[in-house]
Amino acid sequence: DQQVKQNSPSLSVQEGRISILNCDYTNSMFDYFLWYKKYPAEGPTFLISISSIKDKNEDGRFTVFLNKSAKHLSLHIVPSQPGDSAVYFCAASEDGGSQGNLIFGKGTKLSVKP
Amino acid sequence: KAGVTQTPRYLIKTRGQQVTLSCSPISGHRSVSWYQQTPGQGLQFLFEYFSETQRNKGNFPGRFSGRQFSNSRSEMNVSTLELGDSALYLCASSLTGPRGVSPLHFGNGTRLTVT
Image 1 (cartoon, each protein chain N blue to C red):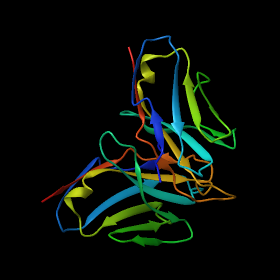
Image 2: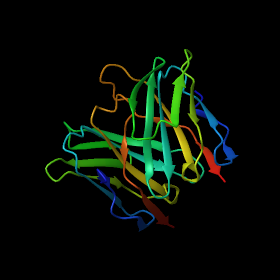
Image 3: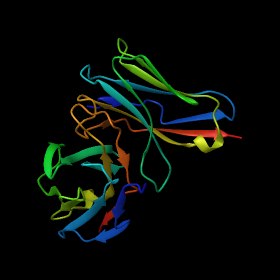
């Protein structure tokens, strides 16, 4: 049973507009959430994280929102750029990520069109 | 600062053989984790090592094993290879302390094909 779900396999957005990627989880013990971006033939690259004690974290064009009651998090990219086209993975951990065990969603492929 | 380095990048093996994959973490990172990525299952946690000790293990059979050396470099071994072991194997390192929240930094992976 998937504990972290990304229900949209793909998303297409126009350059300059907002991209919103969604992620749902089932395990209420998760206390640390991350987003990774992956280009073909490369490993995942860390983007942004959020602790369960917060509901928002921002880093430049990237903002992650956490709704614990709904067990939902989202990644907003504003403005979207063609270089953002990649597969985005949501990940979660029960132990603050301290022992390397992240549970990943299956990813959403973002395409940003010029 | 050099990133996580994995060797080799590509590997082709035959069923029944065994394989060893290598990972050099980012300098100063003492935690090394291994993941398997397949199209069907996505990214799945194999195990994590810290100071040469396995601290955490995912739900994989005993054919999958690993170790970490005193310089934090790590190796992963898969014995008696099966066709289903064909996957991208990713190594990640992190700077961890008590309840550390350093994110994982991934290498580019080793693509293993079992024929």
